[in-house]
Image 1 (cartoon, one colour):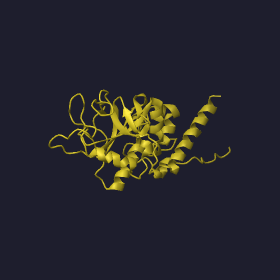
Image 2 (spheres, one colour):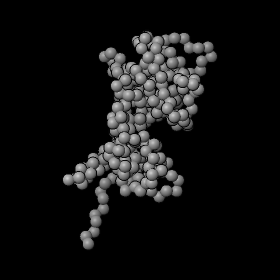
Image 3 (cartoon, one colour):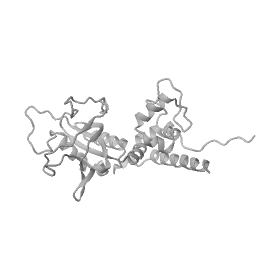
Image 4 (cartoon, helix red, strand yellow):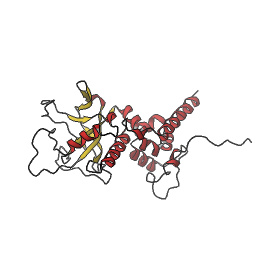
Amino acid sequence: MARKSKSTQPNVGAWLGGNRGYLQSGSNTDTTAKADVGGGQMEQVRAELGLGAYVAGVGATAAIGAGIAAARSGVGARAANKLTGRTVVLHGTGEVLKNPKTGVPYRFDAKGKPLDKGAILEPRKGSPALPDTPAVFGWNPKYLDGMGHVENQLQIYSNQARSFGYAADAAGFVPQKQVVVGTAKTKTVRPQGSNDAIQEVLGPVKIKQIVKTDLPMMEYYEQLGKATKKAGAKTDYPTYKDRVERAVKKKIEQTKSKRRKSTF
């Protein structure tokens, strides 16, 4: 019997520390395309990586195989956003973020991820640009470049109440100094006139993560860039063009190609 040749496909999981932090403690499961993941663990990984429709599109084993790398490079999230019709939104605000129905403040973990299911930003009326139209205003993440252009604008708004920066802050107001990294239905997102750096969002924004702006400058830039990338946005941040993203794309295309051939 002829010996089987070893696979030359990149072990993306190994580059990023295998399955640490994504599979249940004590598991010996690898993160390559050969992963043997049970139903419960599968759901855990899908939820952690934000894959959803991406898993259905490229196959579960391929998604798990590229899982950790996809999460960090944003490949899986971008695919999921495209399939579900969502766009990444960046919104700087100093306001305490609350459930619009109950008025109860949302809770966030140490990484800035919401602990409350369904955390959103609700569009409001009253801005100078759209006084009679409920909207959430944001900055287009594609202009994040690590040079401070959009980062600094978000920081300015993070020191103000969510009064669009024009109305006076309430007495005793303490700014939360945060940027919301979220997603909204693409059909509700439009540029502000000819300026596509500013987004007018006419529907709810799902909060994916908040990033604090009172960190040291470059740390804030880095954390914002990583969170934005992980949510599925393309940016101009220079460190995002790395071999991991290229390897994940290659692995997904290889998997798709094999599936197409097997149907003939």
